[in-house]
Image 1: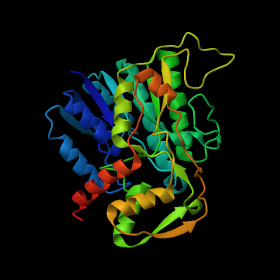
Image 2: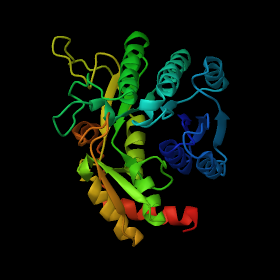
Image 3: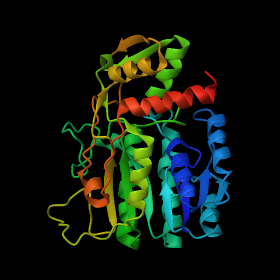
Length: 336
């Protein structure tokens, strides 16, 4: 039995990761600040399910608080840290940049210090497909450079990768960054498109589709995201002896540091997503077609060769199946 620290444990991905760990008999300390970026009641409902497990302990703390983070790490030793706490969302970063500085930069720096001082055997942390920014080569590969982010959110995630690398290089902290591609599924985030589209279709209110609905996203079902996280968590990175400073590979390092994509490798147009939701909800959507929004990219698609090679896993849940499960959960949770 191992002890894991899962940050952002009341969030969408954090909840599912903690659930899977507890189901297989591990101990989980979950940390979350329960902020009100979206309904706190949904976060509390996730936590209520986790607290049914004897191996779960919850700590309410904000990682941007240096003393609170130090206390968290002083309380017990962790066999691995799975860091999923962050201020999420591209569009929100346009109106509240300070939230991203506090959570994604200051909070991550405090977490790194905790891992360093405790000599954590493996830090796995959430990056994002948004780091690919202005890249136009599809599918997106970890071996591409990602130096042109299109939002502050993306910039903070790129910064996390760099910060983790510095700790891996200086202190030997094994760190793996995971670039998630549009996670979706039951217990999801209400600010995500599939969630808000469902709410709008059932209410008969219009849906805004940017880029005339032609934007493509690599929708990745939550169970596939979790499986990828846990497989990577069990394989701390080692220094790559073949890494060359005169021809550096952005996905690997002379330090114990790696970056992987976790995506379905099957991009879908947003208009197709709407049609899939219509089929499962049995209702038609009212759609407003709008131009591209600042900070958005037209297509995301994950190259998952690295993940598959090193873990033997490739996400494969079809959109129709995943959306069907989400809609069933949505109707049950909201009594619709």
